[in-house]
Length: 245
Ligand SMILES: C[S@@+](CC[C@H](N)C(=O)[O-])C[C@H]1O[C@@H](n2cnc3c(N)ncnc32)[C@H](O)[C@@H]1O
Image 1 (cartoon, rainbow, N blue to C red):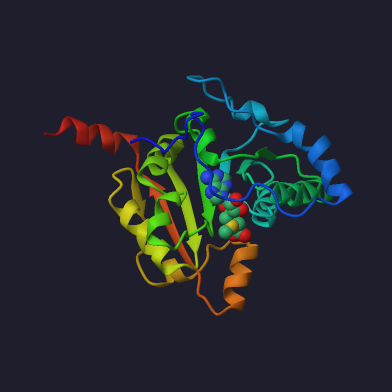
Image 2 (image 1 turned 30 degrees about the vertical axis):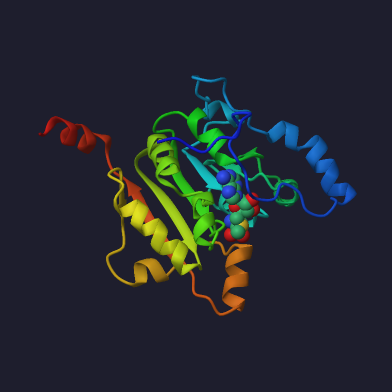
């Protein structure tokens, strides 16, 4: 499964990288704090030492793709101070907002990849991630734009590789066409299992949920969020499947 590349062999990015000019305090955080927290992808073929990214031992690593202004990521990092968090977001104004929260709250357990998460996923170690959040990802509603969506067969394959056995992938969205597209892709993915047993499982947020900016906007406009929880199947099952003909 290949991912669309442009002639310079970088992945094609359709979102925004920059909005309004940053206020001086935010710009100073980008100049001084971001370089200390920034994740650099490993050289080709190597994988990142995730535990070594954080000042002390961590109980597990969680990944948020497209953290927007970072309020969910910063709140989760406060709720789970023993975990290490990696946030990916190419929109620098969002990165600057997260940096402000990190500074205000004195958070030491967040590292930032300020680029397209698809560039980072191949550098993460196999089974290295304990939980993945993809919240209110751009739905690209027009049919001809749907291949720009973050969740695709190719990214699911990369995510499944880097998720530990039993790790959770949480997808939230208020866009029903996007949700049905995600469900279609995920339910045919052999390494992931949807956890819903009743309607409440996808209409109610998880107990430690922190509302994101996009969710607040969706609710204000009368749209109902959907929460899809998938677990990474144990790798033993894969081996059993491969050995059965
Ligand atoms: C609609 S916003 C939602 C932001 C936030 N999760 C929230 O709920 O408020 C989607 C965000 O995902 C980011 N994004 C989209 N594709 C991405 C990718 N491949 N890697 C990292 N971030 C991505 C965009 O830059 C944008 O900030």
